[in-house]
Length: 277
Image (cartoon, rainbow, N blue to C red; front, top):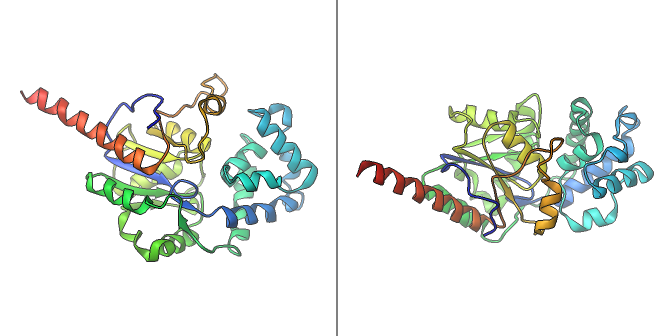
């Protein structure tokens, strides 16, 4: 298990990103993004694209330049299957919240045509979710997707066996602002009547997930399912004044997440016993 450092607190609730953390829906997602990009001018979004010079990384600048030149994603982006539409829109529009909201709306309209097969990202994801449930923590799903898509996809995974594993679910059209704003995390906790604090762990595969977790004042766990090396992690989480948000821990698999949760819960129990003695 790769960890930047241990979280500060045990989890009472673990909220997990849907796409590219729990399940694989890359094909439908990239089809929908490619539907949106040629329409940026019609959506009055073309002039709101960021300048490549303002990009966070060289790779972001290359993605932005390719979209500007070709009105689509580079084939290598889709082949690598490592970046979500949320991060794509962050690269394209940066801090322009209204532009991102409109892009997400266009994505939702396009995605409806491509909703299809949904499979666990890891073969044992369902088993690991059951292990988390047995730890006595609340489990929830977070997604920028609309509820109609989420409810459909959850029912499709492994013949509907995941439906009863989650205590809460917050979706893109449940809130005013999607990730990287904290609204989805706060909404999921509101459904559980739980506070937003470090005892809520939010697990996601993107920089926007980490930003959302930190803005919500919860614990940010970065799911490194894409297998980024430490050099790349340092690049996307530089900890600078302009980009200050860093994860509290990094896990490479759902099994790592279970191990980390067990460790922190056991550590908390030892502290309580020592206090009682």
